Length: 399
Ligand SMILES: Cc1cc2nc3c(=O)[nH]c(=O)nc-3n(C[C@H](O)[C@H](O)[C@H](O)COP(=O)(O)OP(=O)(O)OC[C@H]3O[C@@H](n4cnc5c(N)ncnc54)[C@H](O)[C@@H]3O)c2cc1C
Image 1: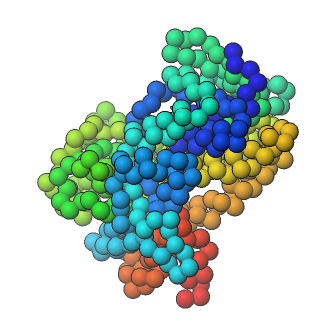
Image 2 (image 1 turned 30 degrees about the vertical axis):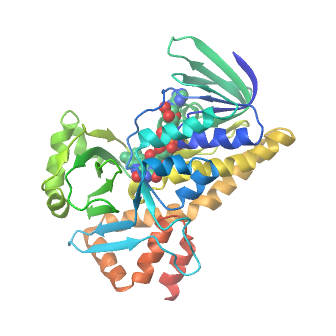
C-alpha cells in the first residue's frame, strides 16, 4: 500500500511519462505505474511532427531523442491517380516550426528515453504492475488498485489519478467514459528494407479505401503501416502477412515503390483505431493521451498530442494541487484547455479523412494543392502542428 501521493499516473508511455516529469518538476509527490517493463514495443507509425521537438526539449529528452531519430524533410503524398505532392516543413508566413524537419523515431527507444528521464527525478516508478481498478470514495477517485508481476495486490492512494494508460484505458472504462466510433479502420504495421531512396521523406500513398505510410528509420529499416477498413481484415486475422502483401499489390503506386523490398518483421495489427472518450464526472481523475480518445494516425499527431496534453494537464492541475486540491473546477478547466488546444486540428483531421476516403475527391484536392503550393505549405504546417488551422481556413475562404 502506498498512501498519500499527490498524483498517481497510470501508464508510462509518452503521455504518462511526460505528466510524471512535469509534476515532479513542480515538486509534487508522484507515483507512476505501468504494466510493461521498458523498453517495450508499441505498434505505431513512428513519425513525429516538427513541433514534437519543442515538447521533448521542454521535457529534457531532445538530445537523447535526436541520437536515435532520423530527420524528415517533409512528406511525399501520392494520390490514387499517381500525382505526388511534396510538402516540406519550412516557415509559412509568420509561422515558424521549432525545427525545419520532422522525425522518424523507433517507439522502443523513444518511450524508454522518456522513462529514463522519469527515473532521473524523484518519482516512484512501478513497472510490470497492472492497474486493475480505481479506488472510489463516493464520487471522488482517490487511488488505484494494481497487481505486480508476482500477482501481489497493491493500492496507491493519491489526490489526483491521471489516466495515461492508452487506448485500452482501464480508468476510462471503469468510469464508463469510453464508446465506439463509426470510423472503423485497422492498422497493419511492419518493417521493410531495400526501398530505394527512402531516407529523408515520409511517404503517404492514398488509395481508398486504404492508405499506407512509409517512414524511414535511422537504422535503415522503413516502417510500413497500411490502414484498411476493419471489416476487410476480419477473415484474414490468422494470415496477416499474406493479407498485407495482397493489399500492397492492390495499391499500384505503393506496389511499385516496394517492388524490391523485403519484410523484416512480423505484421502487427491494431484496431478499431478510432474511439471516443467522455469527460470524467468524478473529481480526482483526469485523462491524457490516447486514454482521452483517438481518431486515426493519418496526420500522426498522437505522439505530439500525448506530451502536449500532459503539459496542459500539469499546468492546469499543478497549481490547484500545490495551492489546495483538485476539484470539479480543475476538471472543467482542463477539459476547456484541451478543447482549445486540440479541437481545430481534430476538425482538420476529420476533413482529411473525408478527402482520403474518396478517390475522386483525393485526386481533385491534390490537383488543386499542386496549383497552390502556398496552401500545401499551410497544410503541412497544420499537420506539423506549427500553423493554426484557422490560417488554412482563412486562405481557403479569402484566397
Ligand atoms: C497504428 C498506429 C500508428 C500510429 N502512428 C503514429 C505516428 O506515426 N505518429 C504519432 O505521433 N502517433 C501515431 N500513433 C498514435 C500514437 O501511437 C499514440 O497517440 C501514442 O502512443 C499515445 O501515447 P500514450 O502515452 O497516450 O499511450 P501509450 O503509448 O499506449 O502508452 C500507454 C501505457 O500505459 C500502459 N498501460 C496500459 N494499461 C495499463 C494498466 N492497466 N496498468 C498499467 N499500465 C497500463 C501501457 O503499458 C503503456 O506503456 C499511431 C497509433 C496507431 C494505433
